[in-house]
Structures are given as structure tokens and as C-alpha cells.
Image (cartoon, rainbow, N blue to C red; front, side, top):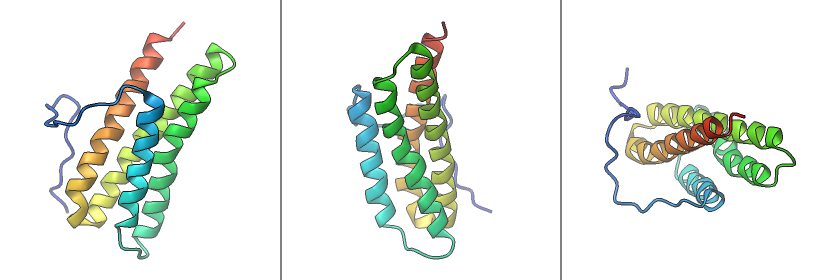
Length: 132
């Protein structure tokens, strides 16, 4: 059993990184960082499916945001933003699994998990703002 803890949403975020507010750029950059991170992980029977799932969910965030940005209707926009939120949330799960399987990658997982979590909160806020 691991004692690895991910920060909770109400914990202070200790980061000096300037946040990107252009979501197209931010989600694209996040996908890039996840791909680079995944290349650092040793491929074995446990890591192979975890990496595959992580790459799929993390890169899907940006792809779905691009679709939302060109939505044909408000309903279509909400649907695509909802997918972005779900994929970002799923990505946090895969980072947790990779951190458990690769204890030496915990800190890097924690940083990338935080970005996926922030994206989840952003997409939740967009959905709440655009309820009608």
C-alpha cells in the first residue's frame, strides 16, 4: 500500500508557474508534456496499458476543446466541454495509477496531475456558466 497522496482541491497550490489562459494552447501544451513524460516510463506489462490510457485521455482534452471551439450550437459546445471535463478527470486517475506503479515518478505525476485537475475545474466552471 502506498502512502502517496495527491493534493486535494482545497489545498494551496505551491507553484511559481505562470498559468496559460488560452485553453487551446494550454490543453495542447499539456498533451505535449504528457507525451514527453510517458516516454520516460519504462515499458513493461503493467505500464504499457497505463501509458496508453494516459496518452489517450490527456491528448483527448485538447482535441475535444478544439471541437468545442468550433461547435455548431450551444448544445454541441456543452457536450464537447463535458467530454473535456471527463477526459481531464480520467487523466487524473491514470496519473495516480502510474504513480503507484512507478514510485520514482510520483513527483512528476503530482505536477501533471495538478494541471489535469485544474483543467477539470476550468471545464466544470465553463459548464456551470453555460447551463442555459
